[in-house]
Amino acid sequence: TDNFQAPDYYNIDELLSDEHKIVRDAAREWVKREVSPIIEDAAQKAEFPKSIIGGLAEIGAFGPYIPEEYGGAGLDQISYGLIMQEIERGDSGVRSTASVQSSLVMYPIYKYGTEEQRKKYLPKLASGEFMGCFGLTEPDHGSNPGGMTTNFKDKGDHYLLNGAKMWISNAPFADLAIVWAKDENGRIHGLIVERGMEGFSTPETHNKWSLRASATGELIFDNVKVPKENLMPNKSGLGAPLGCLDSARYGIAWGAIGAAMDCYDTALRYAKERIQFDKPIAGTQLQQKKLAEMITEITKAQLMAWRLGVLRNEEKATSAQISMAKRNNVEMAINIAREARQILGGMGITGEYSIMRHMMNLESVITYEGTHDIHLLITGMDITGIPAFQ
Ligand code: TGC
Ligand code: FAD
Image (cartoon, rainbow, N blue to C red):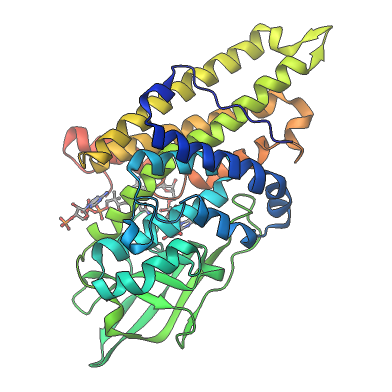
């Protein structure tokens, strides 16, 4: 049974509004009821549990901050973060699906699309009737997406799209893809590519040891004719996809706290119950050190995410501030998962507990949306003014 108790050592609940708490608690209850009972099996079978799409839409996980007139939940950034936290408490792969749909598909259509595109796609994405994916990474361009080679040519009444994307979350089942490609002048634009367009295929990536409950795939474009009205006209250049990443990375900074909370809560409970040498292992200094450091790190991460949420609400958060929180909080979570797994001894490696699944999932989370190294270099560039990427 899922008797998760969320740690709140510094009474951070007092910083939240009633709406925040209602949204958070609804997401928490839904995860307990609908995700926890099925997620281990889905991960073991490496299947995305499509049955939860309707529930994700109901808790507002698809477009939490997209205005209600387009089908979104019309919530603020802290509510968005709290929803991501609760979902990732269940599983990072499920949170990935929500992050992609909200920040990487609905956000660009809302920000960079035409009114017709917003009306056509956003309500159906919010309800889960349409599922989307986001194609930026290519086989030869991961950390350096500006080097992408996927391209389109103006053929008068349509664009002709060629190239390939790799490591794309939701690709195998997505109805539409937000695809970043270069025009004939080498300028990056976003195109909405729909399943069924001739020459567009989405082969699935198999044998992952991480994010097994999330479907990952390639996007292949072989002379795909894309209607001209499918180009999002209101922003171009690398800053357009990076603007979407700001929103997704912010959500991950909260999401990782959820995974960490679940590992900590599980390890604390286990340590108090597990008797060795005639006393609970929680009564040993070594296990207390692990648990005390975990709650300290979770508390610091909660404060960072909350403050970043306030800045996001005021539209004052910089990309570098977001990078710092994504990097810190994901590392915090993966370290806690590794320590928590040890507290459970042999039981920690089984699917009876969620910790090993979180630990393996977080290996993707620390790599995608900008690797741990890249976010450090973003901080380095911000404080010195000198980019060290090249
Ligand atoms: P650089 O020259 O620094 O910048 C190019 C243009 O972009 C602007 N910019 C941003 N705009 C908005 N938000 C940001 N965060 C921005 N960062 C930069 C910048 O001002 C510039 O604008 P302009 O008008 O002057 O052209 O670009 P660079 O080529 O040197 O690269 C910088 C770098 C390395 C930081 C960037 O390429 C990067 O972040 N790389 C990491 C790639 C990445 O994060 N990929 C993620 C793929 S999506 C994914 O992983 C989804 S996972 C699924 C899930 O979420 O669950
Ligand atoms: P590389 O860029 O080749 O990096 C390899 C190593 O080199 C890393 O450790 C990196 O930190 C380091 N490195 C790179 N450049 C530098 C430098 N200048 N200085 C020092 N070190 C450097 N992408 C999408 O577009 N959409 C998605 O939906 C999506 N979903 C994903 C889902 C999963 C499960 C995974 C694993 C990835 C996903 N990605 C997605 C791709 C992800 O964003 C990339 O994997 C990530 O950006 C890193 O790119 P790469 O794997 O090519 O690694």
